[in-house]
Image (cartoon, rainbow, N blue to C red; front, side):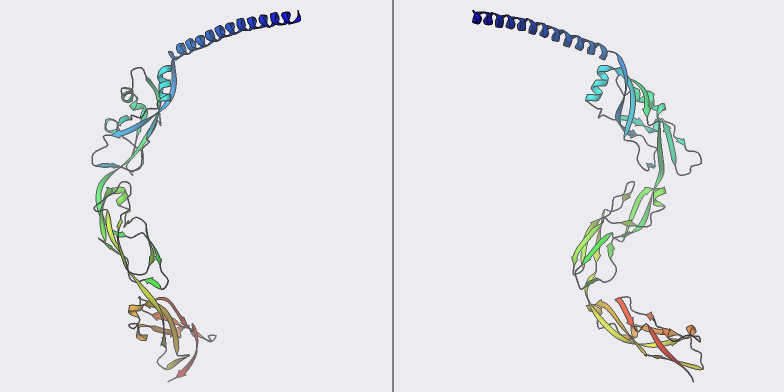
Amino acid sequence: MDSSLLQQFRGWINREKLKFNKKLIVFTFFLVASTVFWFLNKMTENYSDTISFPVEYTNLPKNQVLIGELPKILDIKIKAKGFKLLNYRLNPPNVPVVFDVGSYVLNKLEDDNSGRFYILTSTALEKIQRQLSNDITIVDIKPDTLFFQLSSLSSKKVPVYADLNLELKPQFMLFGDIICKPDSVVVKGPDILLEKLESYPTENYTFRNLSETKTKSINLAQKDGFHLSQQKVKVTVPVEEFAEKSLEIPISTKNVPDSLRLKTSPSLVKVKFTLPFSMFEKILPTDFAAEVDYKYIDESTKNLKVKLAKYPHEIHTISFSPRKVDFIIEKK
């Protein structure tokens, strides 16, 4: 008996669950359907939103070049039906709107002689509107002002310089000037930029582990607004092994009255320097001059400073001693 009642109760529960599930399904169906119909209805209404459009500038003034950059994006506030705006959000525009610069009045900035002009984007609203769908209305465009800096084109010949990093092996040195061939380039560009251009660089290049003279073709640097008569130059870096050498140089005197004789102790200075091996035997004591100056002597002077007045330009890392010497003044 108990078992029969339990089975009947379970059957009743299952029937009730089935009725509830059917009601839930029907309720859910009508809820989703009403939501969809509400959404579709709302999407047929007009809304406003700001969409970013790429922009292409055309028809710049002839014989003029643009300096600097203009905005690559225009943020356009449009009014359209919800479906259209949703499509723009899901598929952002990639075809640029065309901004025909030549069809607008270029307004010159007051008290500005640098060739700067501006255009109010509100004046372009109608022309940009014609490039968009008929079911779209433009409300506003940002930025509200486009600034242009224009300059006439001309050309200028300037020297080329090598922008280099040099890493030399031990016991090797740069010997002589770095040479660029050709040594100059004709640069065509805006007048306002050419006025300040005194030389033109190569691209930065690093020579590593240099132990001999090297020549390499290096590109000239690329700069916005400039066109070059050539794109590369050959750069020669003269390198030679160096040695250390020392010489003794007599100390001469300067500004000594004719009635006096100035003697120094010691009478020689020892000069140490580095130089290329090829110049080792060519550098002689006569290529140097060390001197002291009588005009620096007064009653309190105990010694005189030695000046190295002359030395060859081919040598490097120069040092000499002594830097100061004792002196004796004698009458002739």
